[in-house]
Length: 246
Image (cartoon, rainbow, N blue to C red; front, side, top):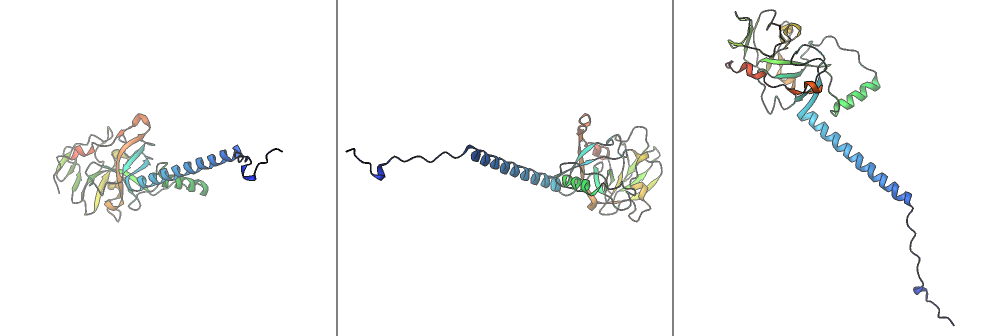
C-alpha cells in the first residue's frame, strides 16, 4: 500500500499574494500624507518668516518715485526696528498713524477676501497697502528738520542734506517747515516730494505729522518684482553721514 502522508507532513499552500490594487492604494495614501506634511511644514516656515523676519508688500502709488514705482513688489526686513536701529535715509513701511489714508478702495466680496487674507497671512502673496504707507526716514527722535536753506536744501540739525534719491526735477519741499521730532517718533517724506502726502501734509493733525516708531513694520530692503527692477534699496543713509546728532 502506498505510504500515507501525516497531516503535519502534507505540503502547505503559500498565502496568496495581496491584490496589486491594495499595494497601489497604500502607496497613494503614503504619498498624500507625505505631500500634506511637506505643505504644512512649508506653510509653517512661511508664516514664521512673514511674522518675524521678512514680509512682502506692493507699491500702489507714485509717492516714492523714482526709487519705487507703482506695482513694484518689495521685501521688508521686520527686524528693523528691534534687532537693528532705524537710520536716517531708511525706506520704511508703517501702519497708518491715523487719517493719512482717507479714501480706501471698496472691499472685494467675502469669498475673495477670505482667500486673499489666507494667502497673505501665510506670506504667499504680497500684503496690499490698504492700511500701510511707505516713506523715507528723514528725522529721528530729537532731530530738528527744516526746509529749505538759502541753497534750497533740506537741513537736519543744521546740516544741509544733498538728496540724490529725489525724483528728478522736484525740490526738497514746496513749502517751508521747521520741526523737532519728539521722542519715540519719526519724520518721514516721500522721494517724489511734489506728489507725497507725508509728514509735511499732516502737521496740522493731532499727531503733528510724526510717525510713532511702534507703527513701523520694517525697513524695505529689496525690490523683488518686476525682474527688470530687481535690486536693493540701501544707500539712502549715505546722504545723512554728515548730519550731527540732535
